[in-house]
Amino acid sequence: MVKEIGARIRLNDGNAIPCFGFGCYNGFGPEMVRAVRTALESGYRYLDSAAMYRNEKEVGEGLKESGIAREECFLLSKVWPTDFQDVEAALLRSLRDLKTEYLDAFLLHWPGQDESVRLRAYEQALRAQEKGLFRTLGVSNFYQNHLEEIRRAFGSFPAVNELELHPYFQQRELSEFHRRSGIALVAYSPLARGECLNEPALQALSERYGKSSGQIVLRWQLQKGQIPIPKSIRPERIGENGDVFGFRLTEEEMAAVDALERGGRLGNHPDRFPV
View 1 (cartoon, rainbow, N blue to C red):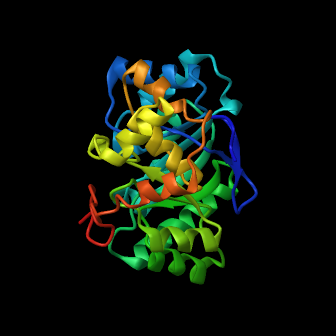
View 2 (view 1 turned 60 degrees about the horizontal axis):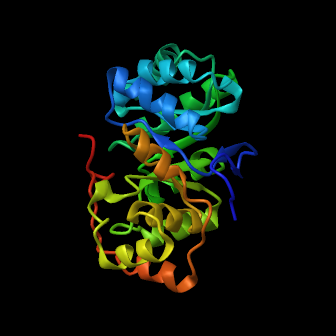
């Protein structure tokens, strides 16, 4: 059982990733700089960024202003399919904007709809990894068929896959495949964009533990072995989200959250996006 926000989980490539992260999507300008700085000051050590978010300069500035040493922070970015033709160039832009010489992890952000393009992009990323530009190679929004393509082509699975995962959309079969295959699961939109937080089952657990419904959901994800990356620009919410290590849900309570599944995807389907 992980006991603190900075605790790390061993990956299948021998590297390690913090068990809890700060999502950097949809925040801009000084507001985003402050949010990143606040997250790091609150104990977060994993920043989940992407070129497509168009705020990596702010993320880099927030890291700099925090005073946290670069080597203490796990910095992740992603390449969008429109840049799959020249992955290294996209990676170098992210490094420049983030003001760092390397990434701890670099992901293909979406599989796209062309297997050959996807696999060439992955191969380019492997070459960039060999140059020391990043440490761990992973993917985001990849389904089992995409992951098996990579294993057939390159002999092993990616170390990380980032997926939409929350009580309304648990992707149980795919999650079990990741567990069996040794692929770490990062959960984005872990609070279902707030849509699930008024569920009676979560409200009851909130009252029982003296925690918010959001904290109950994040604790549930940790106990399922997922790495949640909640996002907020509000300092009090950033601190609240990370305060989920002082209690543990029982098996019955975990099952009560499991029962909220409704197949409720909020984002785009990996096989149909981006066009």
